[in-house]
Image 1 (tube, rainbow, N blue to C red):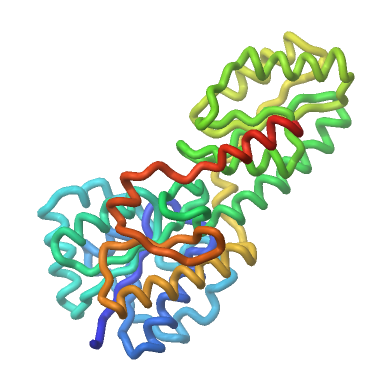
Image 2 (image 1 turned 90 degrees about the vertical axis):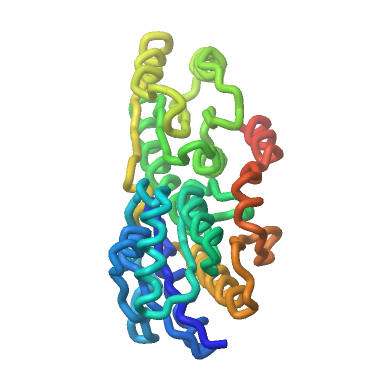
Length: 320
C-alpha cells in the first residue's frame, strides 16, 4: 500500500527532533512512501504549510539542535472545527498518515485526529522526560548533559567562595532532570515533585553540612515550579555561613547539539513509527523500555502515570 506520510514536531523543541524527522523520512522513502514535513506543528497542519521531503532535505540535520520544521503550541486545536480544517488540508496532498513528535499535549492532539479516522503514530520528544510509555524521551539526555556541564562550573565558583548554589532546572511535573543531574553532580539535595519536599529538611541538611562537616560548598537542584529558589538561597545566607546563590538555567537547557544517546534513540523510534504505519497500526506511541523499542495504544499511555524510578531516588538519598 502506497502511503503519503506527514511528520510534525509540536510543543517545546528538544535536541534530537531533527534526527527523528530524518529517520521518519528516510525509513518512509525506503518503503516507497511520500513524505511531507509540516511546519510549526499543528499550526502548519491547519494552514496547509507542507514541504515535500526527500533524502537530501534531511541530509544535514542529524547533528542540529531544535527542529528545522519549527514548532508551536496551538490550544485551538482542541476545537473540532479546527481539526476538520486540518484534515482537509491533509487531503489536498493525499496525506493519509501522520507521525507526530512531542509530549503529552502533542499526543492529545494526535488522539483527536485518530478518533476521526486518521492514521497517526506518536513519538516522545521533550527534554522533560515526562512522556508515558517510555523510559527516555528524545532530548532528555542532551538537556541532562547541559545541566551537568553548568552545575559542574557552578561548583568551581561555589567552592572558591563558600557558597550554596540553588539551581532550578526544567522538567514541568517530572523530576527526572533534577534527580539525574543531582546524582551526576554530587548535589546534597534534590527537590522533585515525586518526593514530598519539606523546606526545613533541605535547610537542616545544609546546616548540618555547614556546621558539622565543615563543607566548602553545597548544591541544591530543584525542579521548576516547586519552590522560589531565590527565597531559599536567601534563607541559606541568613541561617548558615554559606552564601546562598540561586541560578535558573531556563531555556538554555533546550538548546545544543544532540548527544549520541538522543540521536540513536530518535533514529530507532523514527524507524519504528514508520514500521507501525507500514503494518497499518494506528493510534500507537513508540518508546524505549529495557533498551527495546516498544509501542502501545496512545490513549492508554496518556492515562498511565509516567514510569518513575523510585529506586533511583533511594540511591540518591543514601549517597548524597
